[in-house]
Amino acid sequence: MARTRRLAALAHHDLRLFFIGESASLLGSSMATVAVTFAVLDGGGTEADLGYVMAARIVPMVVLMLVGGAVADRFGPRRVMVAADVLRCAVQAVLAVSLLTGRPAVWTFVVLLAMWGAGESFYAPARGALIPEIAASGEPYEGKLRDANALAGMAGSLASVAGPALAGLAVATAGSGVVVAVDALTYVVSAVALLALRVQERPSRAAGTGGGAASLLEGWAQFRSRTWLWVTTLQFTLFNLLVWAPFLVLGPVVAHERLGGARDWGVIMAFYGSGAVVGGLGSLGRRTPRRPLVVATVATAGWALPSGAIAAGLPVLPVSGAAFVAGIGSAVCGMLYATTNQRHLPAEVMARITSLTTVGAFALGPLGLALAGPVAALAGTTAVLGFGAIWQITTGLAVLVVPAVRRLG
Figure 1 (tube, rainbow, N blue to C red):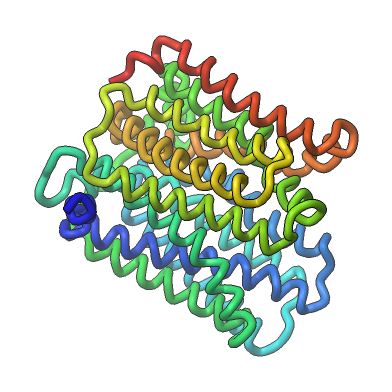
Figure 2: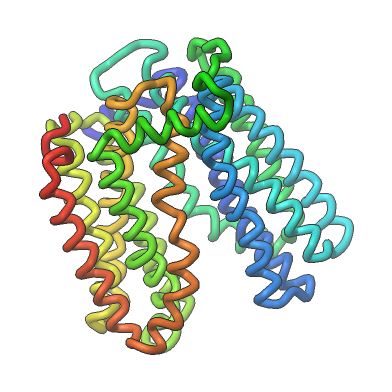
């Protein structure tokens, strides 16, 4: 009965279409990432070549995200998302043809993945602005905005669990080119779902009064004027630098040296993704807490558990359990943060602020990935992971001390 009530959100036309489109495109992207990795290596590429290719996708996402937010606020999020889907579909179609007809050079991967990342840099902030419009369309009910964000999180969680497994099987049986071609088709599904939404199309509007720079400055002014917003963003910036990046780098090292290698690391991450799915399902149909940022901040403590479990020398089963709890916390805090932003921020700057929070949260992640190994070589893997676990708990408590975070309803 409870499960039926929670899944009732999918009975609503726009929520259902949004979930289908998001699930398709994110699953395709997750599969394509694995396929591209093996395509580069199978084509004779080195580890350095693979690093260049992966960076080619990430750099445009960081550099262009702020521009993407301004464009989405100016022309409307749905238009920008459809355009981004068309671009990503075209890019993946070209890459698929290249893979199916030969072995592309590394520079081909670099150019095409840079274009792929550029499309994502426009799609992501527009998505953050479209979700409140989806929640406002159709039949209203209490908690619809919360459910829309929970469904968005579930789509990502399902893709993170199923994507790598499906990609591994598909690459082995059909090849990387076929997987990338499937990814191109998923963007078609996403674009069609977006076009079929019944949200009211907003007219293009001037985002700011002085052109692009003024538009970005307007978004920045809105961002820094809200203490709760920049404090929580800073928390995630430092989390990605000091906790999550070291876990992603050093976790596989520990699995290789002490646990069961790639198999056990795959189990740990599968438990994390499964926890996120459970957390998303559990969020559907529930009332939003009176103090959402307090609950969200408490939920971030779950991320301390996997690092702490590995640092403590625990076997794979307890580490997997810790990852499962962290996944639940990830889904809960992600849903609550997104819902809070969308309730308390002006709609006309939503995409720009989404781009600021996204860039702010993840900008130092690559630095954390690069430094985790060298720092662990000096201080030890246990020290780095243990520090990350303690840091996560400590910063969560520090955030809860901020009155603007505690009092926001």
